[in-house]
Every structure is written in structure tokens, then in C-alpha cells.
Length: 122
Image 1 (cartoon, rainbow, N blue to C red):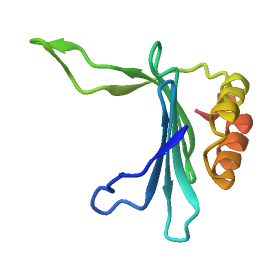
Image 2: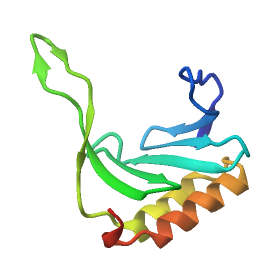
Image 3: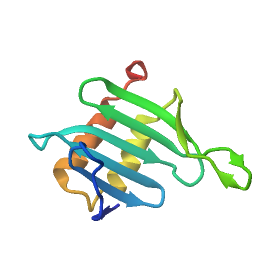
Image 4: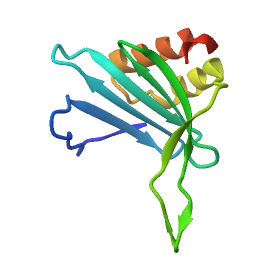
């Protein structure tokens, strides 16, 4: 994954970083102390997009991405829909391979959270 360097924060939002490659995207938000407080890993982005989001205060949420219904020739806004199964070990291994260009402190943090995921987390 490569970092997208032109990421404008929304008003009131903390600093974020975005790492991208066609099949996997990682967004990471940092608090005032420069600690990760949210990350969202989107995977299988082309065929069957899903997102695992981790929040410092509430844990994990796993969703599939509904790319929006066709409405008069254009797509509606994609939304996240709850999706139970998450192959944390498999996705963690893919992430490890694709995250070689991500700063080590971020990639290690995300990798460890992926490995710690349990089905009871969502």
C-alpha cells in the first residue's frame, strides 16, 4: 500500500492518514496525543468489499460495503451493512504482505488488532 498524501480533514476531525492499493485500503485517525483511536481496513475492495473498523473506546465492527442501488442511471452512495464472518488471520496475513510501505508503528498496531479480533467483538 502507498500513502495518499493529500487527505483533507473534515471540520473538527483529528488528523488521519490513508494508505491505498487496489484491493485494500487503510484509514487511520489519530487523537491529540498522536495515538491511533480509529482505523478502518477495507479489503477485497474490487470483488466483495468489506470493512473492519476498530474504535479505541468501542472495539470492532465488521461490515460489507453495499455499493448503492442504481437510481435513474447513477449509483447511490455506498453504505456499510453489518456482516458477521471475518477471517482475521487470513486478512491479517494479506495485510502484512501489502503493508510493507506503511510506517512500522502503524502496520504493527493494525496487524496486532487484526490478530486479536474475535467473533464476539462485533
